[in-house]
Image (cartoon, rainbow, N blue to C red; front, side, top):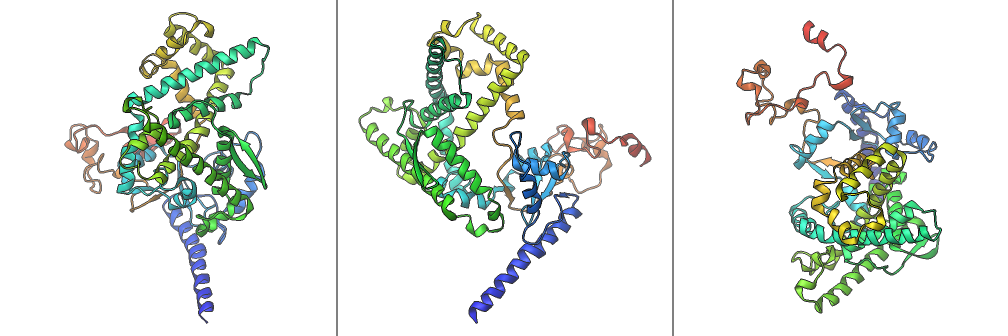
Length: 475
């Protein structure tokens, strides 16, 4: 009898959660003016359309979520979309003004979705990447931020640039010996791996191979290849379609493939744990001024982390996973675009001549000159075109195409730009004088001019409403 009642209650809950709420949200969001991706199916949402889109995947495929939205809206994606691949719907925002607003005035109301934390906890633990933004999170971020102070960054950059110089010299020798082909991804991956090792462990030598289990077999891989495969496996697990409807499985690895993935995550954590213990022993024989300013030593000397090995492993895992693939992708993409565009490449070559004061070949540049011209100060003050190219690269080909899902902890106005109290004092009051330059209401509460984007009922740019003048006059 108890089991029957439990089954009935569970069934009623699923009907309420995956049928009633689905269609209520569909009606509610449409009423607010948001565009849904389609009429959702009970329990399934719009997942069938997504599966249909996946069948078209090819080598020119963009991010799967982006391709799905392009398909649904015929390449004209609205700024606010309700994505019903997830039965209850998720708000997808591409409006830069609101994104800016969410980072500033509404920042305290946005939190990482708990599912991200639950799914990554096995490998990232209590890392700041997905952990709830409580007091402990704030304290950890404050302590970790010291790793990115300028003096420590310059020390690490010097080692990275020294390693890069050595790799370039090795490549020149290989070319002189007749090796004319280069696997760019492999080359960049090797360089980035060495750079990450310097930043985290203060090392640039080849570390031990790590055992990676896949399809019942174990291969011993370099850290770079290991991290690439592990990242791909974790991403595939998080995007697994069956998980959309079964949140209670987020903390579990289900099936043979995921069980092997779980073993590989533990391999990485054990490796980092071993590195921590080795470093502890090594530091005992060093004077304080001899200790390298890498990420691991920062944790070992920090009062919040030094006695909690698990927390140190969490943050090192996050550093490795977050930095390896993204940096490698960004650098590979930049080199691709420089190769593709002759004018841009020529402009960058001209800047190299200006910075070095000559037209040097790589063999004429000493390591000392290389390090001096590529210091943090020189990069920010003299390498203007290089910075422009790097930023444009991140704009057109960002290594991460979308944010992780967020939740809103309190009710806010999604379309609240024109009722922002910081821009519009007494925002709910009808005050025509707001638009009179001679009126006190024309300015913000701080006595400043409002941001242009705070008032845009007719939109702007080339998509500004064609009937703007007519509407203003007829009303």
